[in-house]
Image (cartoon, rainbow, N blue to C red; front, top):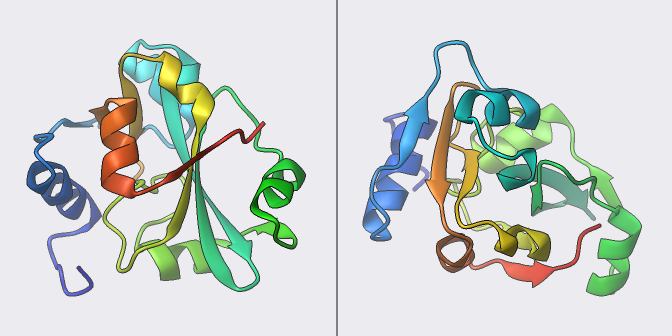
Length: 158
């Protein structure tokens, strides 16, 4: 996927279609750079927004897909993983590992596979919304499809 030149949103679309989900990307000219802005634009519950949060775990990226209504407890996550300190990644680190800018990171469409954790609390929602690679785009997906296409590990993150 590293040589794809159609841009991050086009890559996310292609991953969704290849996975049998279809193109569920919606674009908002006014932008949706935060979970609150996305929930308002989509007229959905803030908790159904799936934030793609990139952390630095010993120099390697860790992607946590968490509810927009939750704050990730990095100590809890580190304890469950049996690993060291999890730090919020810099914008440059996020861009390097995802090919996408903070505020628009998608759970898919990265240059290479990233260790991914999926917030178990998201499974109560019939439909989830996640960033689609930029500040203006979101895509819809079920919890089970998100789990399948990301290869994530389900975990309590808050």
